[in-house]
Image (cartoon, rainbow, N blue to C red):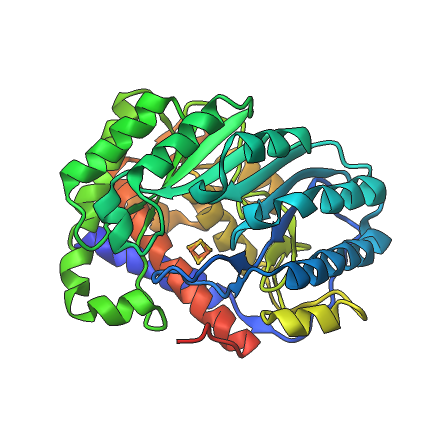
Length: 414
Ligand code: SF4
């Protein structure tokens, strides 16, 4: 099928454009609108599907972590003192585990950069109660993304989450009443015994609660995860549900008034919120944090102990992939289409060449197969294009993670 060919072609072209190198020199002075992605690598336990390296939380480790993050911010401030920081995003791991220490990091950002912008955080439903929510609001967090995954207790059990549907429901209800500008929830699909009915119920609950954003991520079973080992004989069967479930999500959410914010995110408040990796340019702060700056994708040293040592001497980036010339064009196209559309004007402004000339054949085939269409200035993904965009993005994410693990020499422990 033409659409499958285009999807594989794009994923492999993009992955080929990402080539990691140990030459980590960057020009940090030209940055205009910068955001910070601060990765907090602690979790209560390792979820069986998790693709990232996390550490069990303890007080002493978290003190070391906060000190090291402040040191890393200080190292960057020598280069980007004049750059306005637009957003700060605390990504996981589970940033809500270091709730009492977040203000220490935020004060440091205020002092070093004069920052007064948006602060977003990823939280676990287990960490949300009246007290913690008012703490988050009081320290200046304006946007919250809750890792619900499902409101169905059986689905949560299959995903190895340590809370039931009631806990997830109450966490979101309380968050909605706490005065955040934006409440986002994450849902996962397809989980091992999830049905389209239970997924639909999850969506209905989320919409009924009035959440501003819903991110729906496909399950990615990589060989180093515990869930892969548990389910390896059922992977084809489970992944077989993915297309059907994605279309259910898309059609249901569009029908009840949500807009496509990205291939995997839907919103009733467009323009209010970005996920941690969706800013144009951002610094990755913390162990195994990544960033995009100076036309490069940067990756920090993955291991906690290495990070603590390295940051005492220098910015802890251990590998980066540069996007120059041809590469930056295809990366720009894929990042734009991830948000559902690519603007001709913006492409021309950036690369001084016409989008429809540069990608003539690709765009022709995308339009021919019904994956995209021109609407005014923009090439937009159709309903079918969003579905294939989801499959393509999943392959890119998996390929990118494997490349990152290889480039840094570290795979999460089996
Ligand atoms: S899925 Fe989230 S909570 Fe679970 S181990 Fe990964 S980062 Fe931690």
